[in-house]
Every structure is written in C-alpha cells, then in structure tokens.
Image (tube, rainbow, N blue to C red; front, top):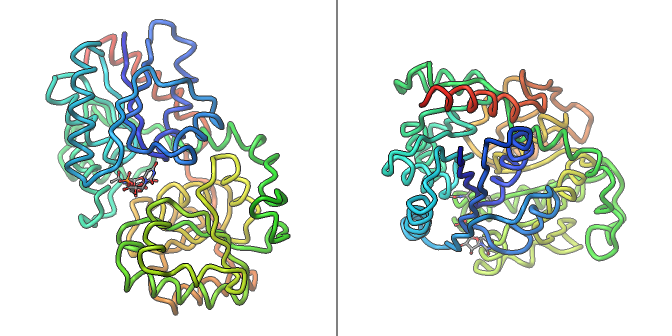
Length: 373
Ligand code: UD1
C-alpha cells in the first residue's frame, strides 16, 4: 500500500513528521515523502528536516517560488509525472498552502484517493489564498481529518458527507508534545550570535511573526502595524524572526530603520522549529498573523494577539489564549498593555489536542483502505 505524503512549505513539515513516525509500526504502509520545493531556503526547509528528524524526501519536485498559478502549476506537472510512474494508492495533503492544492488536484484528476489533514477550517475570507486552497482541497477529498468541531460544521454546510469526516484532533500538537523537552533545551535566548545579544530573560519580551501578504505586501497596512509595534516596544522588547517574504518587503518599502536596537524591535532571520518553540515558551506573549502560531500558543498556554480580522482557528478564540486584534494600532496597544499588566486571557487545551492525532489518522487509513475508498 503505497502512500504519497505531500509537503512543500514550512508548516507542512510539522504535520507530516508524526504521521511518518506513527506509520512505522505498519510495514504494509509504504510511506513516500514528496517535497514539492515550495520552500527551499535552509531556514525554511532543511532546518525543519533536521529538527524533526524527517527522512530525506523520496522525491523532490523543485517547484520553487512564483505567482500562484505558476507555482501551483509547476508542482502539479511534476507531481502528476511522479504519481503516474509510482502509482500510489493514496495521496495525503496537509494544511492549506499551494502544495496542498496542487496535490489535491493531481490526486483527483488521476482518480487516486485523497486524504486531507487539517480539513474543514474556514476563515470565510476568500481574499486569503489559503481559504481558496482549503475549500477546493476539501471538496475533492475522500478522507477529511478535522482538528475541531467547527471544522465538522463547516464541511457539513458545504455538503460533505459525514462518512468522510473523521475527528482526529490537531496533528501539529503531536509534534509539539513530542519535541517540547528538546525545544526546552534550545539556547536561543542566550546564544551570542543572535537573540542572546539582547540579554533577555524569560517573560521579559514579546515575540512577533508576520508574513501574510495582506499585512506585509500592502505598504499602508504594514506601516500601520509598524506604528503599533513601535509604541508597544516602548513597554516591552519585541523579538521578530522574519519570513523571507517579510524581509523582502521591509527592504522594498525602506522600513529597515524601524527595526533597530533603538526601536526595541529585534529583527532576526526565520528560526528553526526547536528555537521557535523555545522563544514562544519563554515569551510574555506572541503577536502573529500565522495559523500555526495561534495553535502553538494555545497549546502552550501563552497569550496570543492575532494581527488579522478573521481566523480559521476559531477554537483558539473560544477555548485557547488567542485574541483577534486586527491591524488597528489602538486595539493592538490596548490588548498588549493588558497582558503586560498581567491581565491576560487564560485558555485551556482544546479537546483531542493530545498528541495522539497521527495514531488516529493511521487507524482510519488502515481500516478504510482495507475496505477500499
Ligand atoms: C506560504 C503559504 C502560507 C504559509 C507560509 C508559511 C501559500 C499560498 N502560502 O506562504 O499559507 O503560512 O507559506 O511560511 O502557499 N521565499 C524565500 N525562500 C523560501 C521560500 C520563499 O525566499 O524558501 C520567498 C520568495 O520570495 C517567495 C516568497 O517568500 O516569493 C513567498 O513564498 P511562497 O511559498 O510563495 O509563500 P509564503 O509567503 O511563504
């Protein structure tokens, strides 16, 4: 039973690692790791393979960056060839990136059964490329593995039969549970070549991640966010490991001057998995526009302010530590200062975010493939 596991962009690696580990117990599952090459820089890809002990990909498609159709099309062309040659019995895609969409389209067109991990999430904002990827992928999937009850409601409203939906919890949290002891040993706060220079101690700083096109590709929105962050940084230092897209936009807009020791915002390159988790764990709070950080901070019990007007991770708002603050400086400052004063929102761990999602998924795959999808 040959299974193609598709990864391509940074958040995919954390979602596939536990699945490959859980499948090791079942020799009849021949797991093949396919890397589309959507992310290719060392600190966007290889460092995650090292941190998560992922095997070398069986197939590397080398798609690289590009406009949406260009990138998705390049992945599809290469993946279709590989699938025709290798004839997998199942294709598994994770999350909502362009590699997810490309994998789903290829599977559907070749009549290969398709499984989607992290199905059913909706921000209801079609301006987000990820929302298009989610809707299309779910509509094509045979097995839909959902992380929370909202996802089930969304899928049922879209007419997906209940028999295809499986509640398995959040697979990204499997990785968090598994690697937390190792992440706690990271020396990111003291390492002299980076954040260590600031001499920060635990809970004395906030951490920021920001890379959504809606925030960083739009000059006006980006400068409004910088205004809020600069004011907030007068009260607490902000550590900002930046995605390459964000670094490119900072250079393009000439915004480098806002990120200096004087501004109390420390800009660094994107971090590997273990360093990033250590940084969140020790932060007073996080500011983010990433989906993954909303999940991880809820799981770690760290307050999170999300710099967006919508989220696909509604559970992190209802159960977790997350608050949507949008991009208006007043709201960001108000909520940031509340946390600094110790009045943060307390959350709890959502149901089934227990580190056992991969095992549940493998069990479903084994029983379903036996019956034939
Ligand atoms: C992609 C996902 C997004 C996810 C993010 C995580 C889509 C539509 N978006 O966004 O959902 O949150 O990954 O990181 O799939 N770049 C590099 N080196 C790399 C990769 C990218 O320099 O290794 C730069 C390139 O300039 C590229 C830009 O980042 O054009 C954007 O990369 P891309 O993969 O298109 O989208 P992300 O913004 O990374």
